[in-house]
Amino acid sequence: MPTDLQQVDPEIAELISLEARRQSDTLALIPSENHASAAVMAATGSLLTNKYSEGYPGRRYYEGQQLIDRVEQLAIDRAKAVFGVEHANVQPYSGSPANLAIYFAFLKPGDTIMGMALPMGGHLTHGAEVSITGSFFRGVHYGVQKETGRVDFDQVRELALRERPRVIICGGTAIPRQIDFATFREIADEADALLVADIAHIAGLVAGGAHPSPAPYADVISTTTHKTLRGPRGAMIMSREQHAAALDKAVFPGLQGGPHNHTTAAIAVTLKEAATEDFKRYAQQIIANAWALAETLLEAGFDLVSGGTDNHLILIDLSNKDVTGKVVSQALDRAGIVTNFNTVPFDKRRPFNPSGLRIGTPAITTRGMKEAEMRQVGRWINDGVEAAKKGDEATLARIRDDVRELGQSFPVPGAAAQSRIASGV
Ligand SMILES: *Cc1c(COP(=O)(O)O)cnc(C)c1O
Image (cartoon, rainbow, N blue to C red; front, side, top):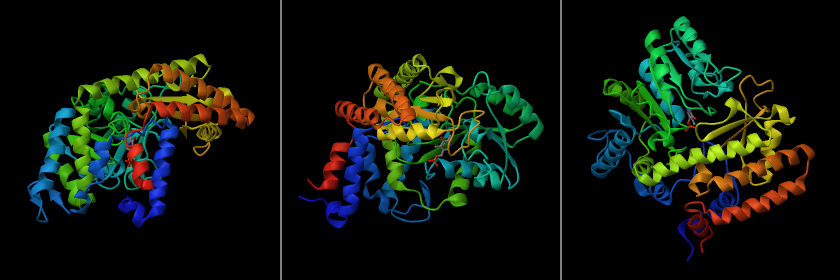
Protein backbone atom coordinates (compact mmCIF):
# COMPACT_ATOMS: atom_id res chain seq x y z
CA MET A 1 0.00 0.00 0.00
CA PRO A 2 1.77 3.20 -1.11
CA THR A 3 1.92 5.94 1.49
CA ASP A 4 0.70 9.48 0.88
CA LEU A 5 4.19 10.78 0.36
CA GLN A 6 5.00 8.12 -2.21
CA GLN A 7 1.76 8.94 -4.04
CA VAL A 8 1.95 12.72 -3.90
CA ASP A 9 5.64 13.19 -4.46
CA PRO A 10 7.54 10.09 -5.51
CA GLU A 11 10.66 12.13 -6.22
CA ILE A 12 10.97 13.40 -2.66
CA ALA A 13 9.89 10.01 -1.29
CA GLU A 14 12.68 8.38 -3.22
CA LEU A 15 15.25 10.92 -2.03
CA ILE A 16 14.24 10.41 1.61
CA SER A 17 14.49 6.68 1.14
CA LEU A 18 17.95 7.02 -0.37
CA GLU A 19 19.03 9.37 2.41
CA ALA A 20 17.90 6.78 4.98
CA ARG A 21 20.11 4.29 3.17
CA ARG A 22 23.01 6.77 2.99
CA GLN A 23 22.83 7.42 6.73
CA SER A 24 22.75 3.68 7.41
CA ASP A 25 25.61 2.82 5.05
CA THR A 26 27.96 5.55 6.24
CA LEU A 27 29.31 6.85 9.55
CA ALA A 28 28.25 10.36 10.56
CA LEU A 29 31.35 11.73 12.27
CA ILE A 30 30.33 15.38 12.00
CA PRO A 31 30.29 16.38 15.68
CA SER A 32 27.25 18.65 15.35
CA GLU A 33 25.13 15.83 13.92
CA ASN A 34 23.18 13.06 15.59
CA HIS A 35 20.41 10.56 14.92
CA ALA A 36 17.14 11.65 16.55
CA SER A 37 14.93 8.88 17.90
CA ALA A 38 11.87 7.63 16.06
CA ALA A 39 9.76 9.20 18.85
CA VAL A 40 11.36 12.61 18.28
CA MET A 41 10.79 12.34 14.53
CA ALA A 42 7.18 11.26 15.07
CA ALA A 43 6.52 14.47 16.99
CA THR A 44 8.37 16.55 14.38
CA GLY A 45 6.24 14.97 11.65
CA SER A 46 2.96 15.57 13.50
CA LEU A 47 0.01 17.84 12.64
CA LEU A 48 1.12 20.27 15.33
CA THR A 49 2.78 21.93 12.34
CA ASN A 50 -0.70 23.22 11.39
CA LYS A 51 -1.21 25.52 14.37
CA TYR A 52 -0.40 29.21 14.81
CA SER A 53 0.44 30.17 18.42
CA GLU A 54 2.11 33.56 18.54
CA GLY A 55 2.76 34.38 22.17
CA TYR A 56 3.47 32.13 25.14
CA PRO A 57 1.38 29.59 27.10
CA GLY A 58 -1.64 31.41 28.56
CA ARG A 59 -0.84 34.61 26.60
CA ARG A 60 -1.54 33.92 22.93
CA TYR A 61 -2.68 36.04 20.01
CA TYR A 62 -4.68 33.18 18.43
CA GLU A 63 -7.41 30.92 19.83
CA GLY A 64 -7.45 27.15 19.94
CA GLN A 65 -4.36 26.83 22.18
CA GLN A 66 -5.85 24.42 24.75
CA LEU A 67 -3.42 21.66 23.82
CA ILE A 68 -0.54 23.63 22.33
CA ASP A 69 -0.19 25.49 25.65
CA ARG A 70 0.20 22.15 27.41
CA VAL A 71 2.78 20.96 24.88
CA GLU A 72 4.89 24.10 25.24
CA GLN A 73 4.56 24.12 29.04
CA LEU A 74 5.77 20.51 29.17
CA ALA A 75 8.80 21.42 27.07
CA ILE A 76 9.54 24.42 29.30
CA ASP A 77 9.15 22.47 32.56
CA ARG A 78 11.34 19.65 31.31
CA ALA A 79 14.04 22.07 30.12
CA LYS A 80 14.09 23.71 33.55
CA ALA A 81 14.38 20.33 35.27
CA VAL A 82 17.02 18.85 32.95
CA PHE A 83 19.28 21.93 32.97
CA GLY A 84 18.52 23.23 36.47
CA VAL A 85 17.52 26.71 35.31
CA GLU A 86 14.85 29.17 36.40
CA HIS A 87 13.57 30.09 32.96
CA ALA A 88 13.43 28.45 29.54
CA ASN A 89 12.25 29.72 26.16
CA VAL A 90 11.80 26.81 23.73
CA GLN A 91 10.68 28.83 20.70
CA PRO A 92 13.89 29.87 18.87
CA TYR A 93 13.86 28.38 15.39
CA SER A 94 17.50 27.36 15.62
CA GLY A 95 20.77 28.21 17.33
CA SER A 96 21.58 31.24 15.19
CA PRO A 97 18.30 33.11 15.79
CA ALA A 98 18.51 32.14 19.48
CA ASN A 99 21.81 33.98 19.75
CA LEU A 100 20.51 36.95 17.79
CA ALA A 101 17.52 37.14 20.15
CA ILE A 102 19.86 37.19 23.14
CA TYR A 103 21.78 40.14 21.68
CA PHE A 104 18.52 41.88 20.83
CA ALA A 105 17.46 41.51 24.47
CA PHE A 106 20.57 43.15 25.92
CA LEU A 107 22.40 45.21 23.31
CA LYS A 108 21.91 48.27 21.15
CA PRO A 109 23.32 48.30 17.60
CA GLY A 110 27.05 49.02 17.79
CA ASP A 111 27.47 47.55 21.29
CA THR A 112 30.31 45.11 21.85
CA ILE A 113 30.08 41.31 21.92
CA MET A 114 33.12 39.32 22.95
CA GLY A 115 33.38 35.69 21.84
CA MET A 116 35.82 33.09 20.64
CA ALA A 117 37.25 33.84 17.20
CA LEU A 118 35.76 31.74 14.41
CA PRO A 119 39.11 30.28 13.25
CA MET A 120 39.88 29.38 16.88
CA GLY A 121 36.68 27.36 17.30
CA GLY A 122 33.99 30.00 17.88
CA HIS A 123 30.71 30.36 15.98
CA LEU A 124 29.61 32.81 13.27
CA THR A 125 26.95 34.19 15.62
CA HIS A 126 29.57 35.19 18.19
CA GLY A 127 30.20 38.46 16.35
CA ALA A 128 32.02 37.20 13.24
CA GLU A 129 32.46 39.85 10.58
CA VAL A 130 30.44 38.05 7.89
CA SER A 131 27.51 37.51 10.29
CA ILE A 132 24.72 39.95 11.14
CA THR A 133 26.04 39.63 14.71
CA GLY A 134 29.35 41.20 13.65
CA SER A 135 27.75 43.74 11.37
CA PHE A 136 25.06 45.19 13.68
CA PHE A 137 27.24 44.73 16.76
CA ARG A 138 30.95 45.12 17.36
CA GLY A 139 32.64 41.73 17.69
CA VAL A 140 35.90 41.34 19.60
CA HIS A 141 37.50 37.94 19.83
CA TYR A 142 39.71 35.79 22.00
CA GLY A 143 41.49 32.59 21.05
CA VAL A 144 43.46 29.69 22.40
CA GLN A 145 47.09 29.39 23.44
CA LYS A 146 49.30 28.10 20.67
CA GLU A 147 51.10 25.53 22.85
CA THR A 148 48.12 24.09 24.70
CA GLY A 149 45.23 24.62 22.27
CA ARG A 150 43.16 25.76 25.27
CA VAL A 151 41.41 29.07 25.91
CA ASP A 152 43.90 31.82 26.69
CA PHE A 153 42.32 33.30 29.83
CA ASP A 154 45.00 36.00 30.17
CA GLN A 155 43.90 37.23 26.77
CA VAL A 156 40.20 36.88 27.67
CA ARG A 157 40.68 39.01 30.80
CA GLU A 158 42.87 41.61 29.10
CA LEU A 159 40.44 41.96 26.19
CA ALA A 160 37.39 42.11 28.44
CA LEU A 161 38.86 44.85 30.63
CA ARG A 162 40.02 46.85 27.62
CA GLU A 163 36.97 46.49 25.35
CA ARG A 164 34.26 46.39 28.06
CA PRO A 165 31.86 44.15 26.11
CA ARG A 166 28.23 44.16 27.19
CA VAL A 167 28.16 40.37 26.60
CA ILE A 168 30.89 37.76 26.91
CA ILE A 169 30.03 34.53 25.14
CA CYS A 170 31.76 31.23 25.78
CA GLY A 171 31.38 28.00 23.86
CA GLY A 172 31.89 27.22 20.20
CA THR A 173 31.93 24.72 17.39
CA ALA A 174 35.42 23.25 17.43
CA ILE A 175 36.38 23.11 21.10
CA PRO A 176 37.68 19.68 22.11
CA ARG A 177 38.03 20.55 25.80
CA GLN A 178 35.77 21.32 28.75
CA ILE A 179 34.59 24.89 29.04
CA ASP A 180 35.71 26.56 32.27
CA PHE A 181 32.49 28.43 33.05
CA ALA A 182 33.71 29.51 36.52
CA THR A 183 36.69 31.43 35.13
CA PHE A 184 34.53 33.07 32.45
CA ARG A 185 32.16 34.12 35.26
CA GLU A 186 35.01 35.74 37.21
CA ILE A 187 36.13 37.69 34.18
CA ALA A 188 32.56 38.73 33.29
CA ASP A 189 32.19 40.08 36.83
CA GLU A 190 35.48 41.98 36.62
CA ALA A 191 34.41 43.52 33.31
CA ASP A 192 30.80 44.05 34.37
CA ALA A 193 29.54 42.01 31.41
CA LEU A 194 26.77 39.46 31.03
CA LEU A 195 27.99 35.91 30.59
CA VAL A 196 26.28 33.88 27.85
CA ALA A 197 27.16 30.18 27.64
CA ASP A 198 26.47 28.82 24.17
CA ILE A 199 26.31 25.07 24.79
CA ALA A 200 24.92 24.16 21.35
CA HIS A 201 27.53 21.43 20.90
CA ILE A 202 27.66 20.03 24.42
CA ALA A 203 24.05 20.33 25.65
CA GLY A 204 23.61 16.54 25.62
CA LEU A 205 26.79 16.08 27.64
CA VAL A 206 25.60 18.68 30.15
CA ALA A 207 22.14 17.09 30.35
CA GLY A 208 23.69 13.66 30.85
CA GLY A 209 26.10 14.88 33.54
CA ALA A 210 29.18 14.28 31.40
CA HIS A 211 30.23 17.95 31.21
CA PRO A 212 30.02 20.58 34.00
CA SER A 213 26.87 22.67 33.83
CA PRO A 214 26.95 26.40 33.09
CA ALA A 215 23.78 26.91 35.13
CA PRO A 216 25.53 28.13 38.32
CA TYR A 217 27.66 30.62 36.38
CA ALA A 218 25.99 31.94 33.24
CA ASP A 219 23.39 34.70 33.09
CA VAL A 220 22.02 33.18 29.92
CA ILE A 221 22.43 29.76 28.32
CA SER A 222 21.87 29.27 24.61
CA THR A 223 21.64 25.86 23.00
CA THR A 224 20.55 24.04 19.90
CA THR A 225 18.45 20.92 20.46
CA HIS A 226 19.70 18.82 17.54
CA LYS A 227 23.37 18.23 18.33
CA THR A 228 24.46 16.09 21.31
CA LEU A 229 21.02 16.65 22.87
CA ARG A 230 19.66 14.51 20.00
CA GLY A 231 16.40 16.31 19.37
CA PRO A 232 14.72 18.07 16.45
CA ARG A 233 16.37 21.04 14.73
CA GLY A 234 15.61 23.84 17.15
CA ALA A 235 17.00 25.81 20.06
CA MET A 236 16.36 27.02 23.58
CA ILE A 237 17.36 30.04 25.62
CA MET A 238 17.62 29.50 29.37
CA SER A 239 18.33 32.00 32.12
CA ARG A 240 17.83 33.25 35.61
CA GLU A 241 14.32 34.57 36.29
CA GLN A 242 15.70 38.11 36.28
CA HIS A 243 16.21 37.99 32.50
CA ALA A 244 13.09 35.98 31.59
CA ALA A 245 10.90 38.87 30.43
CA ALA A 246 13.60 40.52 28.31
CA LEU A 247 14.51 37.25 26.59
CA ASP A 248 10.92 36.21 25.92
CA LYS A 249 10.18 39.62 24.43
CA ALA A 250 13.28 39.45 22.24
CA VAL A 251 12.28 36.05 20.78
CA PHE A 252 8.65 37.09 20.26
CA PRO A 253 7.70 39.66 19.09
CA GLY A 254 11.30 40.87 18.76
CA LEU A 255 12.71 38.41 16.25
CA GLN A 256 10.18 35.71 15.43
CA GLY A 257 6.54 35.16 14.64
CA GLY A 258 4.71 31.92 15.36
CA PRO A 259 6.54 29.13 17.14
CA HIS A 260 7.07 25.77 15.40
CA ASN A 261 4.76 23.72 17.59
CA HIS A 262 5.73 20.38 16.07
CA THR A 263 9.34 21.17 16.95
CA THR A 264 8.31 22.26 20.46
CA ALA A 265 6.60 18.88 20.95
CA ALA A 266 9.71 17.10 19.70
CA ILE A 267 11.86 19.16 22.09
CA ALA A 268 9.60 17.99 24.94
CA VAL A 269 10.13 14.37 23.84
CA THR A 270 13.89 14.97 23.58
CA LEU A 271 14.03 16.35 27.11
CA LYS A 272 12.04 13.40 28.43
CA GLU A 273 14.61 11.10 26.83
CA ALA A 274 17.48 13.25 28.14
CA ALA A 275 16.27 12.81 31.73
CA THR A 276 16.70 9.03 31.66
CA GLU A 277 19.50 6.81 33.00
CA ASP A 278 19.91 5.55 29.45
CA PHE A 279 20.79 9.04 28.27
CA LYS A 280 23.34 9.44 31.10
CA ARG A 281 25.02 6.28 29.88
CA TYR A 282 24.85 7.61 26.33
CA ALA A 283 26.56 10.88 27.32
CA GLN A 284 29.35 8.99 29.13
CA GLN A 285 29.81 6.66 26.17
CA ILE A 286 30.15 9.59 23.74
CA ILE A 287 33.19 10.70 25.72
CA ALA A 288 34.61 7.21 26.21
CA ASN A 289 34.30 6.71 22.46
CA ALA A 290 35.96 10.03 21.67
CA TRP A 291 38.84 9.01 23.92
CA ALA A 292 39.24 5.64 22.25
CA LEU A 293 39.18 7.27 18.82
CA ALA A 294 41.64 10.00 19.88
CA GLU A 295 44.06 7.43 21.30
CA THR A 296 44.01 5.41 18.10
CA LEU A 297 44.69 8.55 16.06
CA LEU A 298 47.52 9.66 18.35
CA GLU A 299 49.13 6.24 18.05
CA ALA A 300 48.93 6.60 14.26
CA GLY A 301 50.89 9.86 14.49
CA PHE A 302 48.04 12.36 14.13
CA ASP A 303 48.39 15.77 15.70
CA LEU A 304 45.25 16.62 17.70
CA VAL A 305 44.50 20.21 18.72
CA SER A 306 45.03 20.37 22.51
CA GLY A 307 46.50 16.87 22.37
CA GLY A 308 43.22 15.04 22.81
CA THR A 309 39.63 15.56 23.92
CA ASP A 310 37.43 15.93 27.00
CA ASN A 311 34.17 15.79 25.12
CA HIS A 312 32.55 14.52 21.92
CA LEU A 313 34.86 16.31 19.50
CA ILE A 314 38.33 15.83 18.03
CA LEU A 315 40.08 18.41 15.88
CA ILE A 316 42.85 16.88 13.78
CA ASP A 317 45.62 19.16 12.53
CA LEU A 318 46.77 17.55 9.27
CA SER A 319 49.73 19.91 8.75
CA ASN A 320 52.24 17.17 9.64
CA LYS A 321 50.56 14.79 7.15
CA ASP A 322 51.16 17.00 4.12
CA VAL A 323 47.52 16.97 3.06
CA THR A 324 44.64 19.42 3.57
CA GLY A 325 41.40 18.96 5.46
CA LYS A 326 39.37 19.38 2.30
CA VAL A 327 41.19 16.68 0.36
CA VAL A 328 40.89 14.29 3.31
CA SER A 329 37.25 15.02 4.07
CA GLN A 330 36.29 14.46 0.44
CA ALA A 331 38.28 11.22 0.25
CA LEU A 332 36.76 9.97 3.52
CA ASP A 333 33.29 10.79 2.20
CA ARG A 334 34.01 8.47 -0.72
CA ALA A 335 35.00 5.88 1.91
CA GLY A 336 31.67 6.27 3.75
CA ILE A 337 33.15 8.28 6.62
CA VAL A 338 31.45 11.67 6.75
CA THR A 339 33.44 14.47 8.39
CA ASN A 340 34.02 18.15 7.76
CA PHE A 341 37.12 20.17 7.05
CA ASN A 342 37.77 22.91 9.57
CA THR A 343 40.33 25.54 10.39
CA VAL A 344 42.71 24.77 13.24
CA PRO A 345 43.92 27.53 15.58
CA PHE A 346 46.68 29.59 13.91
CA ASP A 347 45.90 27.89 10.59
CA LYS A 348 48.25 28.95 7.81
CA ARG A 349 45.70 27.91 5.18
CA ARG A 350 42.44 29.57 4.04
CA PRO A 351 39.07 28.62 5.63
CA PHE A 352 37.78 27.00 2.42
CA ASN A 353 40.78 24.66 2.26
CA PRO A 354 42.12 24.57 5.80
CA SER A 355 44.50 22.25 7.65
CA GLY A 356 41.98 20.65 9.98
CA LEU A 357 39.52 17.81 10.04
CA ARG A 358 36.74 17.94 12.65
CA ILE A 359 35.22 14.69 13.84
CA GLY A 360 33.00 13.58 16.71
CA THR A 361 31.24 10.62 18.26
CA PRO A 362 27.62 11.66 19.08
CA ALA A 363 25.95 10.02 16.08
CA ILE A 364 27.89 6.76 15.97
CA THR A 365 27.45 6.40 19.74
CA THR A 366 23.68 6.72 19.25
CA ARG A 367 23.96 3.75 16.87
CA GLY A 368 25.42 1.71 19.73
CA MET A 369 29.07 1.67 18.75
CA LYS A 370 31.65 1.34 21.50
CA GLU A 371 35.43 1.52 21.99
CA ALA A 372 36.24 -1.45 19.75
CA GLU A 373 34.42 0.14 16.80
CA MET A 374 36.17 3.46 17.53
CA ARG A 375 39.57 1.84 17.16
CA GLN A 376 38.43 0.41 13.84
CA VAL A 377 37.16 3.84 12.74
CA GLY A 378 40.52 5.35 13.73
CA ARG A 379 42.37 2.82 11.59
CA TRP A 380 40.05 3.56 8.65
CA ILE A 381 40.70 7.28 9.01
CA ASN A 382 44.43 6.62 8.99
CA ASP A 383 44.15 4.38 5.92
CA GLY A 384 41.85 6.95 4.30
CA VAL A 385 44.34 9.78 4.82
CA GLU A 386 47.16 7.74 3.31
CA ALA A 387 44.90 6.75 0.41
CA ALA A 388 43.87 10.40 -0.11
CA LYS A 389 47.53 11.39 -0.40
CA LYS A 390 48.20 8.73 -3.03
CA GLY A 391 44.92 9.00 -4.89
CA ASP A 392 44.36 5.35 -4.00
CA GLU A 393 40.66 4.94 -4.84
CA ALA A 394 40.76 1.15 -4.41
CA THR A 395 41.53 1.50 -0.70
CA LEU A 396 38.76 4.08 -0.28
CA ALA A 397 36.32 1.70 -1.98
CA ARG A 398 37.41 -1.17 0.28
CA ILE A 399 36.86 0.99 3.39
CA ARG A 400 33.47 1.99 2.02
CA ASP A 401 32.43 -1.69 1.80
CA ASP A 402 33.70 -2.38 5.31
CA VAL A 403 31.91 0.69 6.69
CA ARG A 404 28.65 -0.38 5.07
CA GLU A 405 28.99 -3.85 6.58
CA LEU A 406 29.67 -2.43 10.06
CA GLY A 407 26.68 -0.11 9.67
CA GLN A 408 24.34 -3.06 9.26
CA SER A 409 25.03 -4.16 12.84
CA PHE A 410 24.31 -0.66 14.20
CA PRO A 411 21.00 0.54 12.77
CA VAL A 412 20.13 4.22 12.48
CA PRO A 413 16.98 4.96 14.54
CA GLY A 414 13.94 5.17 12.27
CA ALA A 415 15.92 4.54 9.09
CA ALA A 416 14.32 1.21 8.21
CA ALA A 417 10.82 2.66 8.58
CA GLN A 418 11.63 5.81 6.62
CA SER A 419 13.19 3.95 3.82
CA ARG A 420 10.07 1.72 3.73
CA ILE A 421 7.65 4.65 3.96
CA ALA A 422 9.45 6.54 1.28
CA SER A 423 9.62 3.63 -1.12
CA GLY A 424 6.04 2.73 -0.31
CA VAL A 425 6.41 -0.94 0.62
C1 LIG B 1 25.47 25.00 15.83
C2 LIG B 1 25.78 26.20 16.63
C3 LIG B 1 25.01 27.36 16.56
C4 LIG B 1 23.94 27.58 15.51
O1 LIG B 1 22.94 26.68 15.42
P1 LIG B 1 22.10 26.54 14.07
O2 LIG B 1 20.96 25.70 14.52
O3 LIG B 1 22.99 25.91 13.06
O4 LIG B 1 21.67 27.92 13.67
C5 LIG B 1 25.30 28.39 17.42
N1 LIG B 1 26.31 28.30 18.30
C6 LIG B 1 27.10 27.21 18.36
C7 LIG B 1 28.21 27.17 19.35
C8 LIG B 1 26.88 26.13 17.53
O5 LIG B 1 27.68 25.07 17.60
